[in-house]
Image (cartoon, rainbow, N blue to C red; front, side, top):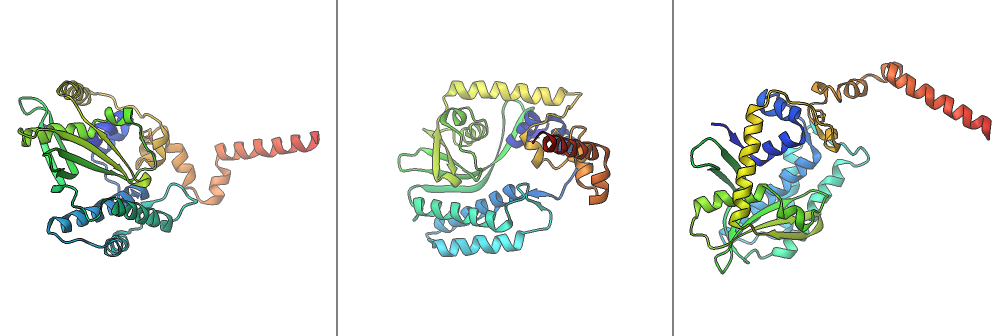
Length: 289
Ligand code: SF4
């Protein structure tokens, strides 16, 4: 029986070739995008904040930011990739500090609910057998005063979805199925996204029918993945963050050219042609001035 995570399923939907390289062939890469690095540092810092609060210890904002900066220094490595070349490491570190500060101001002293767990692993079967297993990590599961369970997820992305987007989001709805299996007497469950860069929270609730429909859709997707014989590349805006451009027929050329020494880069036929075209265009414009 294979176990699937939401990000595994999303990778297949985004690009089947990337899915194959990563999950079927197990091609390992040590690169990490700066966006993923910031996300990890912020998640770990918020985990510490709530783990401390669980034991009635209120961490001050200064302590929390010092923890984050220390984590950042210790975990920084040479294989972190910054795609947006005009932005440096400091920019991203400051971004994380700002997200943590606004979250802290909104939620301190962190006693609005009871934390059941942080970075909680959830693993459950989608079907009655054990053919379709889902695994994931809940950033924070909490219970408020009327017994409602909240599945909290921290997002550090620079994109703020709208209500319709999150009402269709798969990840937390899958986690809800797992939580319901674990705590069948839970009266009410809310899915809560904390979009930290916007200091904004979005909430969604799912009916039993919506969950049943999602269950069927996810099972079909897993069937598609398991029976797939071809894994075509699917180009999108996400390609700039892909770890496998050297193994991708759609990006290989671009990758090879980009990694040539300057002399060879300028002599590469495709690049030379583009440069020659630019020269001729410039001359033509001069003569018509
Ligand atoms: S570069 Fe783009 S198309 Fe190629 S494998 Fe990666 S995500 Fe897929």
